[in-house]
Length: 291
Image 1 (cartoon, helix red, strand yellow):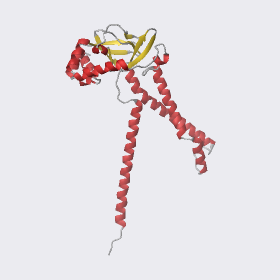
Image 2: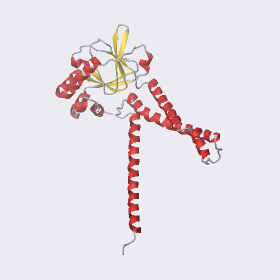
Image 3: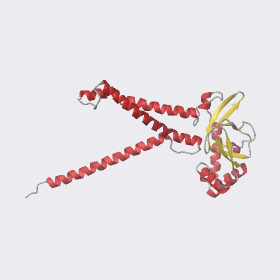
Image 4: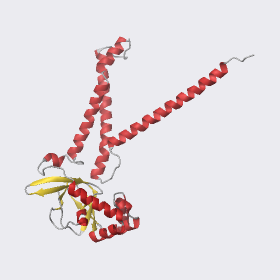
């Protein structure tokens, strides 16, 4: 991959995130030409609280970082940032040193841009400058309490393996829970027996109930695995590959379900309309003629 193609890829990534989405493509390519790519492994520190700002502003391309406010022996978690977020933007609104200690919570890839180039871009685009000023106000007011030594704070952040594992287990559990609430195999077997129905090869009663449980467990396992994959794949790609998804897994399921329900209702209305036309035609054909 040559240098020009890398610049265009970086510019395309920046175009998807504010405030760069309001910047012309030519200016983004020019900014990308002076940038550089840096890799930080998990748990490595990108910046220390109180140290002077570096000559480059970092934009996260892949992975997540945590911002810590260190006060003596205590540390408070201020924010967790991911793809498209900035590191070091506070220097554009008066801060001469880093406000927080920044540590990678996953393997992180960043784009570094010279401060002078970013300042020139902000002067040219007022919207971008106002967005960066808003970022500074959020940095100074947003607080989330946590301890650096607390394993729940460290290992249950969004995108970590522990978080994704618990997320998947929760989805699978509620799949089985919802199935157990909605379908009572014992009651269904009794109703089938009471009305004279049966399943070929299965005796009515207890054996039919056990057969229903067997089928439900197999179907629910497949359905739960499918839902877990649908919900986890966007999160994993966003956290590990740096891809930005506007819709998460659960949102995607809701959109698909509502779309399918809407289509089925439209089809039912069309069928009812067709039957109504057929009934009207049949009545016209059978109506006797007046003499």
